[in-house]
Length: 304
Image 1 (cartoon, rainbow, N blue to C red):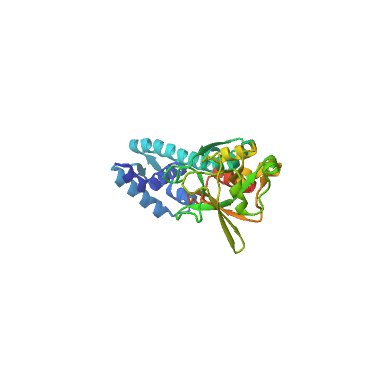
Image 2: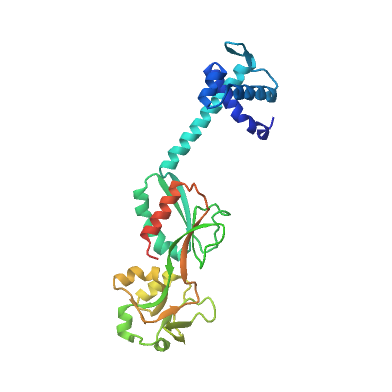
């Protein structure tokens, strides 16, 4: 008999164990919320399926056959295993426990997610976090990752999503650089400055600014070109020039006065992605508590 053949028999096997424990069909039926005739039919069906007699019946009592005694022992183990499984599920459903994996773009993971993990681990001592730094496209179902953080205009179909913030870009420079070279008043002034830009495509040095209905594109130049956000931020902190940075990477330095936003009345429209950032995860109505608490923690503590 294959496992597939056994599946329909599981309820009858559990009923058989209850019948033996109760001593008769009537008591077993009452305990199961059923009827004696239904329980009797279940036992007949089980005996036919197993090809052996399990019970010797009389008007007053039931007696196990040799086969019945052996089957009863296994049925008892089966019911106990089912009870243990239910208890484990209930226990784990009630408290966050286990490891959660979360992937995010490298610079976003470094600047936004990583700083939040220490507080989360202190708050949830039975949860471990695997943070995956990657700029590759990760799918939570295909790649078995609990949470995927991805900047995208709209969440992909078939996934649950929670918005984490908005990715915005801005030109930033150190106060020392601006004192020495002057503060740009208009995007066209950037042409006379050292600028730190991405450099992944030939026109990455063409920065487009918008203010209301106005649009202005300027071709910038500089002696340092880097396709890493952290490197451009560090170069700006070292007074090397005006860097194009996502807000999340510049936030701490802006708050501490180590960097200053340049042309704050203009919005920079970078060639890199800008817009909503989402947490994506499988659409599971029974989302494990360990995943749910991390999603809530990140949503509550991030300012991306």
